[in-house]
Length: 343
Image 1 (cartoon, one colour):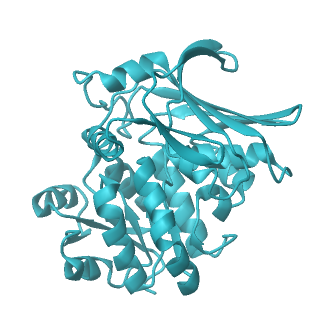
Image 2 (cartoon, helix red, strand yellow):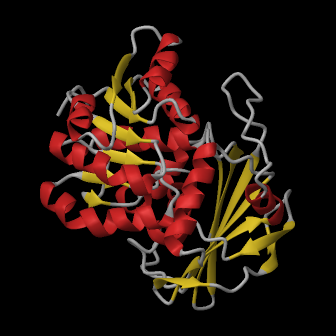
């Protein structure tokens, strides 16, 4: 194990990676900038004198080993994760350090659980996929809403986005997922991922005040379909997206996010509304905040901090809800998220 404050960020020069690097610095960690593009790494480091730069490629295990040498953890922000996750996880296992990523790709996250669960558990390693707005936040909210329930009939996660200006990485990840699915859609029903060709339903979701009822696209399946069932007995996990945001994502002419404040955040706002049902009972949780890419950074860095200080519940491949005390974790993000829990 290396220095407890040194964290390698693979894909540091990407949109989300830059937020993660800044948040690590703010929390007192020492970020190491890594990725395959040496010129972009140097450009990023130029604005942060003294920052260590370690170029590496997922096609070159030796370069990954050099990048991770002496570090306490690695955060993978470089998609598509179908290509990058496995090589960086392998390097983390060789280095004996925790691995955290921000993958929103359903298949890539499922691959991580399938491929590495046994090895990581045997090694006592910690591997956390989808520790991001999609996958991580929804999983934490569902886990917090469940409370003392050990099982539920269904979990619903509705994403109320004011709009969605996707990054190039988001578009590349989506293209990769569509290719792997052969253009089909995916949902989690009956306790498993199902692939289908039927159209997505449109319905109204009763978001809490002040957003109120909004038209959403149903079965707009995100990484929560992998993270939630990985540790909770919930056979139906359904996700929804506000229609305006879904249209933004599907439109190839929608521009990338633009900075609207000194932190580099966009003006986008979000409300994630979660409902879990068991029998005739219902529990809810909701989180509000700004910029889905920027808020991923405090999620990631809080996870890294808790892993490195031993505030975890298990080892192996684990989602955020399985690894951490969900209400406590969400409470620690009070400067980034507004949280509501209803019995």
